[in-house]
Amino acid sequence: MAEKHYKIGEFATLVGLSTYTLRYYEEQGLIKPQRDAAGLRYYTLEDVKWVGFILHLKGKGMRITELQNYVELRAQGDPTIEARKALLQQVKARAEAEVAELQANLVIMGRKIDWYDGKLDQSIGQLESFETYLQRFES
Image (cartoon, rainbow, N blue to C red):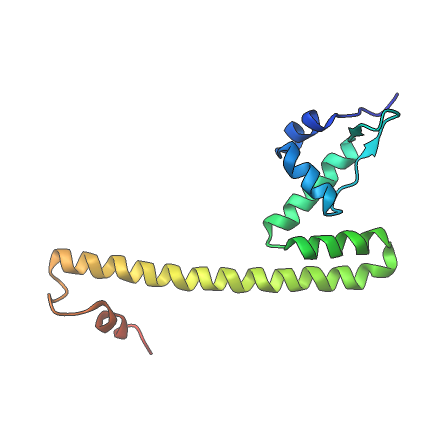
């Protein structure tokens, strides 16, 4: 049984991307569609899985240059496993730092909401600034 081939429009729908984005990813070397006898692009279910993985990495904060590097390393095979692992660890560390920053920002936002609640229910004096209120939580 022959493997199913998807034209770019069908493939775009399958992976949830625009044809423009697929062409951009191709230009950047992230995907490599096959070509039929007429030179038209086509994709397979393996390409669906690959684009899903690329989107997963992108969603985790991997930059386009890092994606390109990863794709190049992957194409070189198992001798590059250490380099790929190091790249993923770098992206993971950056994502963890971003999460920590978001968590810190959420704490401040929560404090600001509490400060407003205190102003509304008058448990915080009219003259107490937010900066002064924050000093209550410093240790």
